[in-house]
Length: 216
Image (cartoon, rainbow, N blue to C red; front, side, top):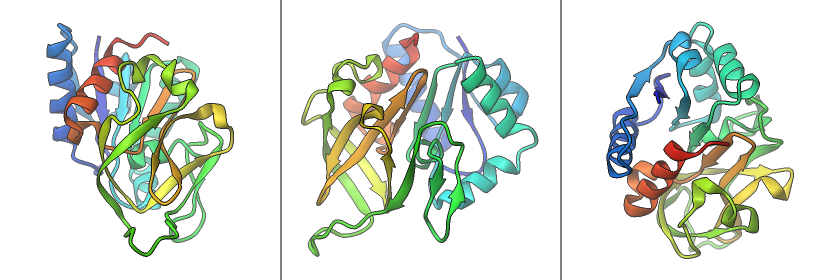
């Protein structure tokens, strides 16, 4: 079972790959974890992970700069139904659009848009940075990738924008930062986390292990 972490010049790729390798070992899996920016590697992968750090538009441009990558992602993930995990901006890119420094199209896989954080409380700074508690939704409590993650599970966040999904059934977990924000979203074979599993210790390793065993 091959897993490809997409390398498009964004995110701490080695950290994500090492966390996946550890999660695989802990589950007794022999999944090879490949970091690659090649469209062909994505087409051949059985599972795909898209990290992301920085501005929405820059990350989308980084993907578009890799020959055939967006086409390969659409083929592997949407048409072939391969399990997909988006992390931080990688999750946000699943949206229809991002509103960071203008309006920019996303991959359009999950209806909704990415908006600026506006906590409404001057004591809450932007970016939202550090540990916070997850609150799984009813859909999240039933989702195999969030199995074992309960209300109060701690995860590590760093973000200034948040994904607002159009349909509540696509919201798998929230985090409270002046308002309930999307901490995890998903549908079908897609799942994404606003937090960083690779930095979230036991919570992150459990989620990554669940993803590696997930058969949507």
